Image (tube, rainbow, N blue to C red; front, side, top):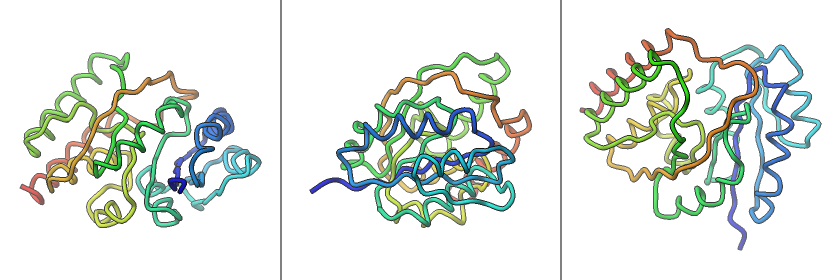
Length: 221
């Protein structure tokens, strides 16, 4: 039997890259029973039209609700229990999907662990603080806390919808939540490319991440 897989791509104003991302997926996914879902988060450009032209499912928010909210919409709508998420900006390699999905057989979540990014010192320090705090809460090493490429089972993650954020920190809070509840999280190294377009993360997101991790500490520990 073919393995089934729902691939979710949250997108907000990613017209420059969304079509290319979808096209790179199809050769990799041909051995799966699969669907590709693009969740358009209130884009003001041609992102939803370009995705529709590629023949994938497109779900649309009437306004910008956030990265995590887009993932929740896609997870609820997914046909299959095996779910893989990836970004619409071209940073994550489609070729990493088969080993990530294969590793899911013995894991509760598999995270595409990125090579070290070139980033300003201030951003590296902020991410280091968050990672150390999360590792203290979970008592486990977390080599990549907020990678946007990961696979999990739909039924497991929906249990945490009331805990995980509707904003950019969805992946961070999901990682901390699963590790705190002693689920098996596996990290596989992947390539990480320069994004197309401008990042949507802003400096004050660091404080939102910190607040959410502290809330999770109180909830789980």
